[in-house]
Length: 160
Image (cartoon, rainbow, N blue to C red; front, side, top):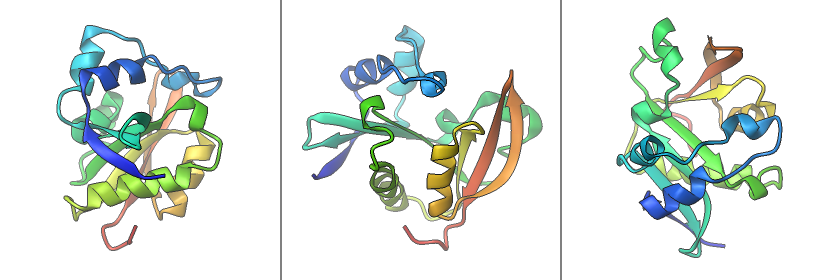
């Protein structure tokens, strides 16, 4: 199936904000609010569509991809492009993660040639294994409440 990358619209954001993940991934559930809609339509979010219609997932870049608590421990001081992503809940755990992440990285690397960093909750072993397959390595860690986050970085020399 062919996937496309589009800028996030309010319609897409409303659908994504209504996604509900099963435990323990319910940590990633969002609340539909005016602030959340403003965030997702601020220009740093993109939606991945299958056949130009069905949302597969999304990604964001820059400050929107950072966990604010990381600023307190200088987790983002190194000059990198931060990325964040999410896949539709009913598609997770079905073997699509590698293709999805490859697509996102290829889209990002069309415009950006430097180091790429992401932040992931430490409990999300499934995502961490995926990122490691793409040569992301742990750079640091920090707490936000009871949740430990790790930052992972991929150097620009590594191909997609």
